[in-house]
Length: 89
Image 1 (cartoon, rainbow, N blue to C red):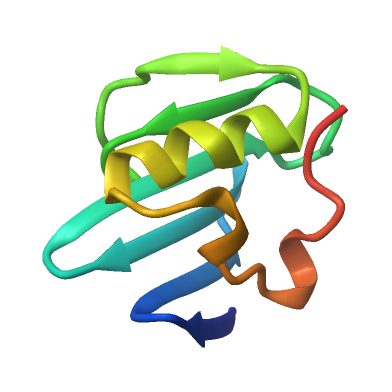
Image 2: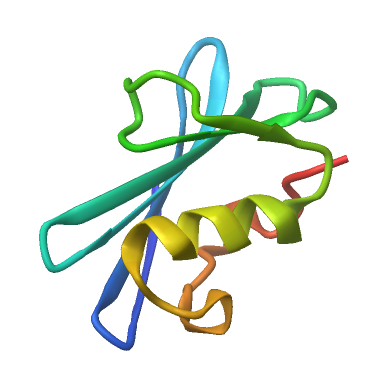
């Protein structure tokens, strides 16, 4: 697991047996971006790591835009831990 914090947003990146997961939290709000473990599938945006999928995106930037919207911040304000920097197709 790797973690980064900036501007009141905490990001955590970890891998499960099936997925790569990037979570964000800010003031009680959460958002998660998940991708298959192999790293070639579309990104799934969820309200929580285990929540129902809200939308799928090919690009990391689009998934970050949606996650930022869920948190009420600008996408520029989302810290990205090292392991997650290559997510997306």
